[in-house]
Length: 258
Image 1 (spheres, rainbow, N blue to C red):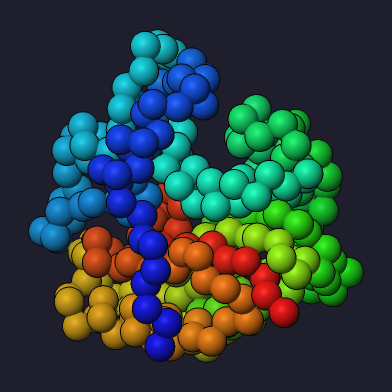
Image 2 (image 1 turned 180 degrees about the vertical axis):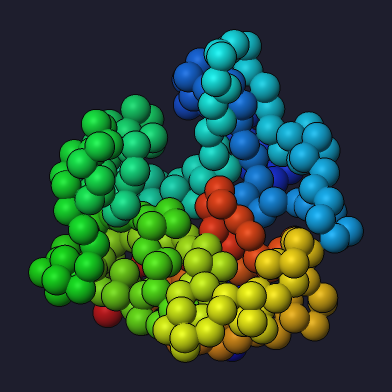
């Protein structure tokens, strides 16, 4: 079973990254900086302590907009493992609005959404794309864009992503496990509320029982053991609940080996 490696530490990363010029630049563009990817919610049914979450995990900047925007600055903890190799080009698969582009000039964003004005390449990361991009990328990441598959296909999703990285190249993938549980239920032709890992979530309990969390985490780690790469970060944490819209709750940084 694959154990966690170099998991994100909010306090340590915040202490380091707060001193960088990059953070100063990002701060000019956003109203809030989000430092944590796992949403910390109350364990009481139907209750979400959003004020505490904002105070603890979001840093307000001096900007003032009618519609405040936040930036997932903590993702640079993972991206720095890619950036430290000084790649000539970096790709974001499923980039959406391509939010990292202003801070990584050599970043190329790929997304199928024609309505996104900042996308560099319009394309769908499907099996055809994967097959035609074997050993292709020197540096690539994908945040919550490739998890629209049943949970039983988790290993294939990660293996396919790794296969697109050149030998010696690095990648970062983040997945939201809830989306995969939901698609597993659909594949089995059952209501998602009847999925064993989703029952509590669908009745308003954001953090399931400890035994449910442990079972899901252990199953995830077993599925992802023995990956064909050198693991730099393996960060699987369901302890605060399965829902994580910000950056997934399965996060892996790796270097492709022989």
